[in-house]
Length: 294
Ligand code: NDP
Image 1 (spheres, helix red, strand yellow):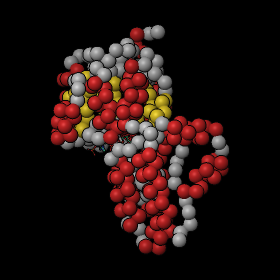
Image 2 (cartoon, rainbow, N blue to C red; image 1 turned 90 degrees about the horizontal axis):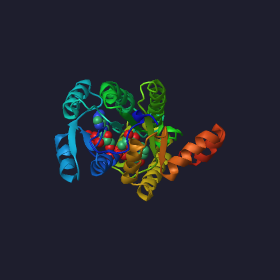
Image 3 (cartoon, rainbow, N blue to C red; image 1 turned 90 degrees about the vertical axis):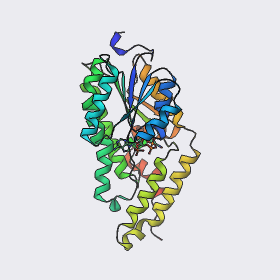
Image 4 (cartoon, protein in one colour; image 1 turned 135 degrees about the vertical axis):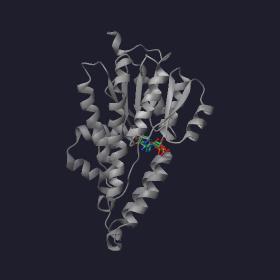
């Protein structure tokens, strides 16, 4: 096996994780620091970085990065270049993300832009910025996508569109970077209870309330039931942020990482469904989500 597929030891290797202030990113940053990497926790607020530094066992340094802000990405690049000296970066975990939830008829364009700015354009902006450091470190890219990157659920159209785009960017990057020996890995978690869910619910209700009343009434009952069921599936999910962090660790130390890892039975199920079933069959399975107005 060629050396450029990477050694299995995290010692002396540096990994940047975006969106590390909470949820999956926080779990990844703490886990990677605990297991011997130098974890660079990408956050937008210094106080989040300080909290993580105190919580970490092992080496963790915070880096301010807003993935949608070119200046912020450039400043982060400069800081990471200084921190890594000439050794480059071993891993870039693109985790920062938001999830817009609302019937597509109700999604304000401003929210749709934000969804793509963070999960798609911001993601690629960070990849472009950090590729020279990844080349220098014979490193790899780990993209946190979602089970929703396989099947576009009702009321998650904006998020699914962004996650499908992230999947496409990942596939293209993986193919383009083969000659440079930079592996690109996709992680698809299923539902995991994180602060994402409360944010989704608040914003989803605001989106629904932003359209004329008769339109609201077409969706209200069905959408609210969906949000309730969604929350229940997150609350009862057996998948934890640490499960995702462990898979990210595996992808980072594997000599030859898989192209995709699913985390959780729901994510694996979504992947299998999307690959095996025709559209109409999937429509029937998901049909129960959308109920007529009351
Ligand atoms: P959280 O809301 O807990 O975390 C999202 C993170 O993204 C936060 O650290 C947030 O920072 C950061 N972020 C948001 N906007 C930006 C930005 N412009 N620049 C930099 N960072 C930003 O959600 P999760 O941990 O659940 O989600 C993390 C990723 O996992 C997302 O990409 C999501 O799509 C994916 N995912 C989550 C699942 C789940 O069930 N939770 C399932 C499948 C995938 P800040 O605090 O500053 O806003």
